[in-house]
Image 1 (cartoon, helix red, strand yellow):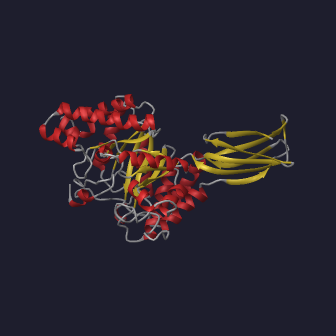
Image 2 (cartoon, rainbow, N blue to C red):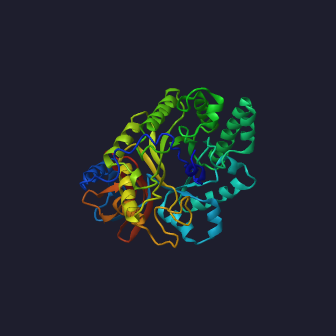
Image 3 (cartoon, rainbow, N blue to C red):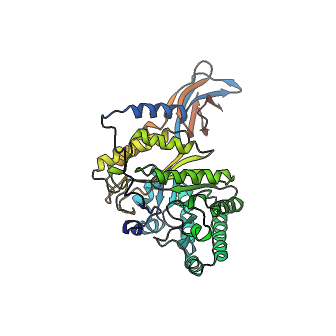
Length: 438
């Protein structure tokens, strides 16, 4: 590891061992300014992220014409997520913009550091994190976990007993420690706190300290990884488990991407309970972008590897010279990802400069002034991809509209009677019908 990788504080260290010989071949925006990528993305979004909805209003079993109908999206089906810091949550106190923004802008959060192995085993550490789960859920923000196993030697991640087993060459002890950790953290959170979505293996292609100690196989074909996955599946059969790797949707490192693809195929061939393929997407400068066409090709490649969802697990743009360019990149990168039918979630790795591993978050400056990235994010998530419609039922007692997938607050009224209810639309195919009785 170089000095940069050793200094990183987030769950996102970056190994550049082969970057000196592999240079980006396609970076940045289309040179001709073409927006054809966006037209195609918008069409896919309408196909895969929206549905026709019919609201049928009845009274005494008969369909009612002329009833007023209001439908407002309350929660997207798609995970719009962020990293959230436990220590900062307690430092800033109630009513702070940090606490309010996570509730206003996201429907999912993952703790930035609290679930790292060493941190989680420290006295009182996970109890503090557990307290925030209730706060987030009170604000309709679900909680995901990351990472369960991160084999890095460049950050304060692994506990002392793991280092002792490594130094002693005690393979049996090392296997036992990993198994116990997997069973304990997943058992605690999946069973006791209903935290079911997990980055299980973090950066297994880039960092493979433990698999190297336990197997002679290449890290991306290590039988140890299969063992760990099966242990996790048995410990928490209701969990959603992901692998996570860097430099897959940024830069041009074909050997690194090939190894990640090989790892995924290797796991799936053994029926490992792999549910999601995750991509870190830290763009450390404008030269690390790829074109829209190249971004789409990479998404298509990994979607084609098996029955898995795709997620962006860590997105930010530290090192961009221009915040305006960073905002445009967020807009394009997010829209392209959202348009892919296999994509299930998109996570910012922090949103505020006052709590960010590089002090350069996508949405807010340290004084809470919005960045161009904030406008890009809000314009997409809460405008383009947001449904708030109203009308009246027709002669057949139905009101029809096009709706973004998610959970809705629905209100119907006629002749002084009003009913308010919650309904969901999850299937983009065909028409979803909500029948509501006055």
